[in-house]
Each structure stands twice: as C-alpha cells, then as structure tokens.
Length: 186
Image (cartoon, rainbow, N blue to C red):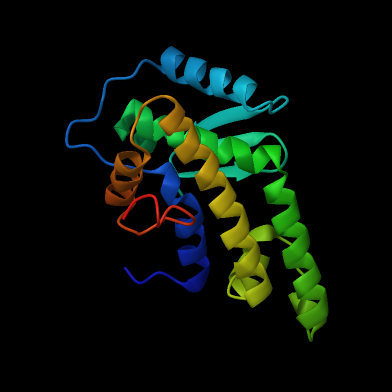
C-alpha cells in the first residue's frame, strides 16, 4: 500500500508509539490504566483521557486532554515500549503540541489558500494539504524530538534501554522514527 504524504506524516508522528513482539504480553487493562495515570501525574499533565480504538495511526495526542491508542498496538508492546509511547504522547499534551500544530496549519493555510473551497479547517484536511510545508515539518521535528527525549530519558532513569523500545516500536510500525535519538541509538 502506497502512503500519501499526509499518512507518512502521521505514521512518523506515531511511530514511537508502536512496537511489535512475537508474543504479545498479556497486560491487564487495569494495569495499563494504572501505568498511564502514574505517568500522567509524574509528567504533571493535568486531566487527560486515554481512549482505545481500532486505528491505523497506532497512537496520537488529540486536543488538550486526549490520547488515543490502537487496542492491538497497546496490547502488543512490552511494558518499556508502552511507557515510551505514553510518555511521548503525554509530553505532547503537556506542551500543547496538538493545538499549536493545528494553529500553525491554519496559519499556513490562510497564507497559501487561493480559493474559498479550500477553506475547510478540519485538521486532517489541512495536514493533507500542508503536511510537507517546511515550516510545519520543522515544527514536527521540534516537537517529536522533544517528546522522544523525554520518553528516552524516562526509560534511562528506570534502568531500561530506550533504544530497545524504539526498535520494538519501529518493528511494529514498519517505519523509522528516531527524531532526536539518532546519537543515542547508533
């Protein structure tokens, strides 16, 4: 299946949230929620919700308070990789990255739109139209690098190997996603 530029951006944003194991760990849903809540408090993210759904996007932060994770993805990750994903997404909420990214896409759209039919401000429409814009790509590099640094440092502080978690996530998603961790995981 050929990915459109829009889907590539989403895949790249979500890669640190995914991973693969030949035998998925059996994780109790209550344990997953407990892990999420512990990390939410540790990273001082005010109220946030975690939702599970079938999604080709693996995991993403949405709005000011929500993280959505694909059910199979969350069940297929080791604890370390799932922690990496949770920290990564919580950092996006902590720094209001979803809103900032949406605002940037709207601004780019207002500058570049040449016809009123393109004035649809739906996030996915804007991402599809302007996801390759150099300013937006720079923004993505910045916020993904920051989120990955936090997630990697979290695992290091726990005595776990972030490179192993990243490799697991990349194996699961089939894409490379190492914003800001290239030197760490050579």
